[in-house]
Length: 401
Image 1: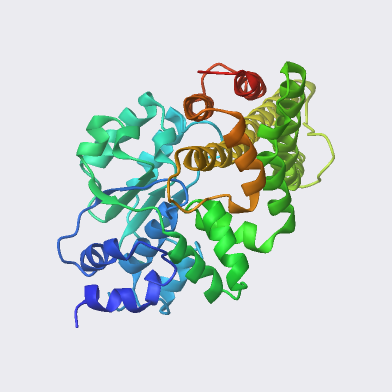
Image 2 (image 1 turned 30 degrees about the horizontal axis):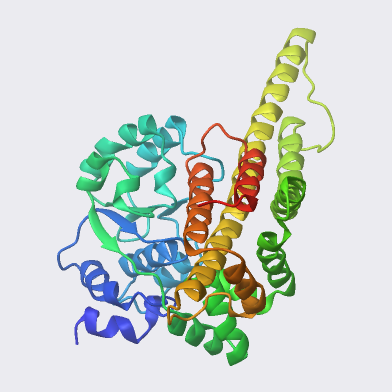
């Protein structure tokens, strides 16, 4: 039996949800049949781009060439500790030219223990144009034993020259049934699994959080109360402030410990291993240079942390806006009598009231306003996230149409 036939049965592919249509192609390539060295894996948020890339990387390093999932090569990749695996997860708003130069350097390194040197670039759409062009030559002609896996929402999010030089793998949005089955297999109650699958809108990671984390369910409920709090401009601004502050709190809570650990580690390095102490030098001039160097290193760290925090806030707000789009979509479905499954069925009473109190064209205008706000956050325009959310809330409370 071929690798493609074996692959859907499990092994490194067992963690894929709703993406069985790509397994055969990837498994055949990993087994050495029609292999390419530059790949672009695309799909909407939550489709599992990074999961697919990691599974493919494991198959490429599999000692049996079948993607067995249990040999040392497979296990090391799936645990993200393989010596010949490089994973780039941009934490700030973009991947800059210095990052691209480092990728070029790493790509040129020959594999030490595995079949390939595998590089996974998550959120490759965050390349700046200059950085992407810097990396383009490596993408066009990868070193002999290097495989590059770029992950992005769609080919259109990359430069045309980049997309044209990659073999493309297109993922789908997992269905509610796929997500429900995956959650039930993990031990989640079927009713909660079905609710989380619908509410997550095809995002497995979020479905898991909604199914297992009461705080996540509470935050979602708070977001979906926003359309009911828009009696006037003052109410709209208050609702927007609450939404933004909640995003800041959630993002900060997830990164606070990491920020402190990074700062403590840097202080330890700068003080020669004595965290909390100041750098010292043999002569006054040398000491001054070291102090200036320490200040610069701390400033660079703080800049990276600020960029990461900004992205974290935008990511949290993005999920909130996705929920709001779905809420108004459900309202529109009620207004036009569409026989479709409601995404936020637990909010039916509020949505039915909104459907009675507005017209379909008003609901469409509100959906467009939410989508425009989301796009401004995704594209990192000059508008601050808080101002973008406040502007949106004011638009939503206005009688449009």
